[in-house]
Length: 170
Image 1: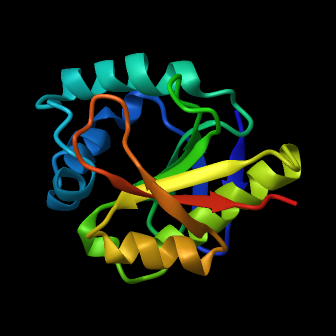
Image 2: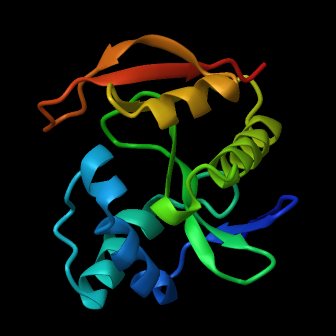
Image 3: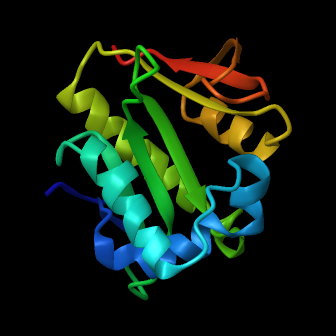
């Protein structure tokens, strides 16, 4: 299993034991506003979500959902990862943090580390990201780490257009 260290964070692939944290994250106001309700209401639901939706797409090296753990305290602050969705041509970068950790640079630190790992192991491979039009924090973060706006995008089954970003991995 891949582990990535940054100045303040340890990033490791999510496991079933992270279900209590994931339950909290998926029901946090920021997740619900910017990502949407995943109908995960219990620890058992969160465990199933990890088993069915997160673990099968992890390759142990580049793709997958990484828990972002603060080295000082051992506390899980959020998640960050690169996902290859069946309905999309290129993988995409995604992240979510509990709101009490917004504005401290943790999401940027994690996203840069995940992106650097991807670029080192898959040079020249395209990567995308997307967010809601009103998520200015996410838009600013993506632009700061080198993503460029590339129009709008509608995910299968969604009714809200998202801002599409692309990153040049060369």
